Image (cartoon, rainbow, N blue to C red; front, side, top):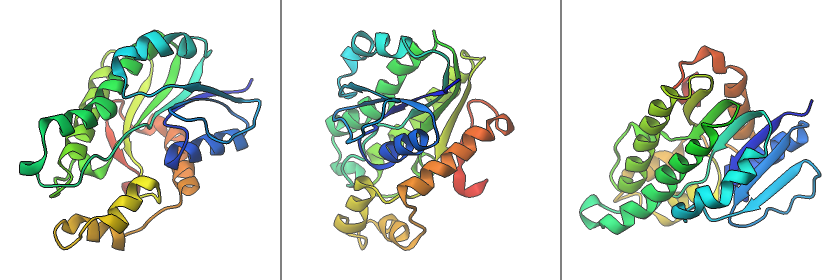
Length: 229
């Protein structure tokens, strides 16, 4: 029987790589994003939706998700970086915009998933969730909150393995902003990112699948950095 994968933010970057990886390996992929990726595959099922519209998530996505039988894995991948700037110059509105997509949208999706049969849920986190770096305020706050959100749901969705996973640095439109537009003399963490390992998206997708295969090794609700396992 073909296995089903649900991926948010499937139109670009890591989400698109995950979508292609699973389709190429014989899975059925159910994708959610603002724009449809250029994929023609009978096993790809797409729902167009902007997850920043959090008030409409349950109304718009419940039927789509409920109709997926026996979900093998969910990747809560959709997210945004937000402005790289000092905390004193970061407005509450800017922080909330990042929290809405990176945290509260996932909360709404988890509420839908809680009623369904799901084997594994992977929330795409970041090393920024545990390491405070100048300029990454909104993103770090959102990813640390995501880690705790997943931890809390793991205590309630006891028949599902839930993990927050930092996939490492990946060549995506998000990291391109950091690599090419951020002044690393002011925000020194950007220089560290530029000089470190940068993965191709498909390689990162394969590494995340390995986490799924090894899920029994990890405590549900825990945070994992793929560079340390």
